[in-house]
Length: 334
Image 1 (cartoon, one colour):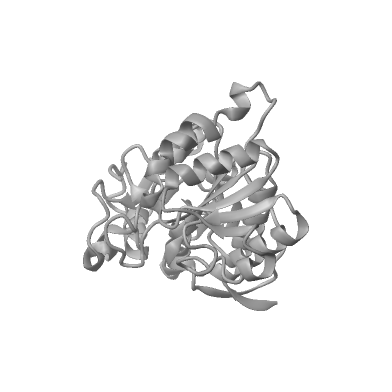
Image 2 (cartoon, helix red, strand yellow):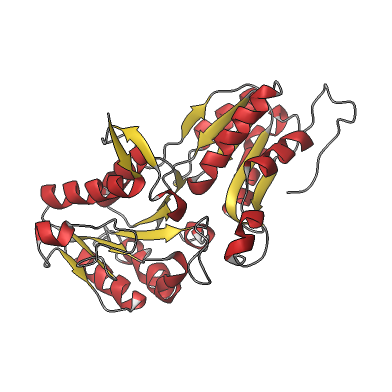
């Protein structure tokens, strides 16, 4: 076991993929000489040359258009959008071409490419530098959406994404880039497989990406009050692991979904609907959501009020229906 930062794990995944497969290319804004804004691509241009890791013009739509053409021609491009809200100029390319090329050509062509997007908040970023855009991509058939929440998954899931035959939007929580953990960098569970991080019997907390750590903190705090909460890290949003989530909820009878994005029409709403449809007769209380508010990301000094926190998740736990609470009743709200 060696200590790595989240960014170093991603760098190792890119380095190993470039070394093992000559069709892998890494490009985007400032990923070459600078090594990326968050230094995820540090040293790759020096090691593999500027033909395989190179800078592009500041034109996100052009970056994705270039990448999808290269993917159709047999390469495996890994592109960086630099910041989540910078990716929107490329959205038309992603929806109209990247996601649909296999269907449009009846399988004759595919787009094996990875779109790396530093996403979500927690860094005090100014406008256009913090956003949670996962629902836009998750609503688009043809895209796989991955959101690692650990150093181990940063490496393992990126390796899986690069080798996937279809396009993968790889969402990297910005607040985690310089978090550290002892880890063995290796391939793990495939894309589409969730993981139970903490077993429990009283309620299920479902989270992904930057919301996993607050969910774990809430479960630890709830244990001091005698509540045994199970925590699930989705790891990927699309494909969604119904089996792991529903198995847990059928056991616990209660479910809370935590997401950093705005609540309305978010990924958490889809998860809540799926749980309600598949676990209705096992539920002891309504499925609750803890999310960002339905506003643009606030200014840096107010950001902590917007993000789902341990305390906000614990508030949701208190709103669940508990037989041992005198005022127990059906809780409402998100």
